[in-house]
Length: 303
Ligand SMILES: Nc1ncnc2c1ncn2[C@@H]1O[C@H](COP(=O)(O)OP(=O)(O)OP(=O)(O)O)[C@@H](O)[C@H]1O
Ligand SMILES: [Mg+2]
Image (cartoon, rainbow, N blue to C red; front, top):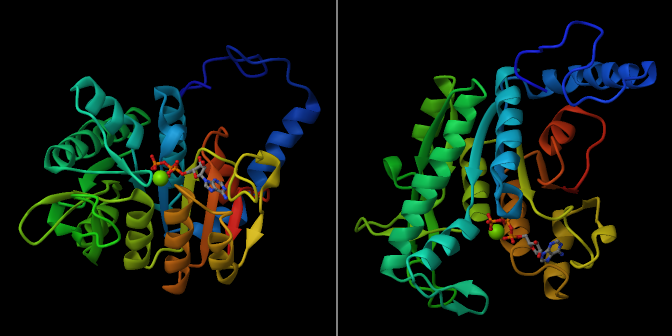
């Protein structure tokens, strides 16, 4: 629907199909149902991690940013943390730079770390900020280097080059932005004590930022329906799981790859007092509105 309704009352908007009274009633019910949720999240901090295939097309990004603006407009203090792995890969390819993977993880040499910073904190970050402004919201783009928000040290998990583990989080700039009515949009590159820039997993960073802010909720938007019992079977969704049951699923190999930092991050944030932690399908139109403002929560709730 266009930003300014253009059809005369009672007539169809461009692209709309016939609207029956039943459909009108359903729409009204959904709007009315939102009231307790709007009240619940009023003035509360909600951190949204947005990444993966769910953010590949301009159309998908545009729609999600409009939802973010809507939430901000009704009083939710939204913080957006974004990934952008596929765009880093594309740029490396364009520059003719080969990517080396170690156990499925990208080896980040000094030049790759620079390119990751350029793509994430530049291209991807500014495109999201611009889309928020296009939707008549107000956003500020930040990255972990700004005000040394995400201090890192070289990860000791494997020799992955300039991939950082977070050692300290400083959310002063994020709070200032929120207090000024802005939506902080955070690219997850970090900095070490020598000023070297590192690539950080965006899920891990989102969880650390949520914990440091004392956020009410952390929502991970991804490109699958949620946590699956079999990652190749979308019908195997686990709707609800206790954080204590996660290590078992990791040990048995049910949770792997890109889902690992998500569940680890959500568990850590819950241990820090986060009330709500969910993984939802960012490919579903208005997924975040359905999750936060309606009775029909979907995806995986981690408790
Ligand atoms: N048990 C599981 N349930 C669901 N997905 C799983 C599971 N185990 C592994 N995965 C994988 O995790 C992937 C999601 O993580 P991935 O890192 O690819 O995306 P993202 O974090 O949303 O994006 P980005 O890393 O760009 O920010 C899924 O596409 C799926 O292949
Ligand atoms: Mg990921």
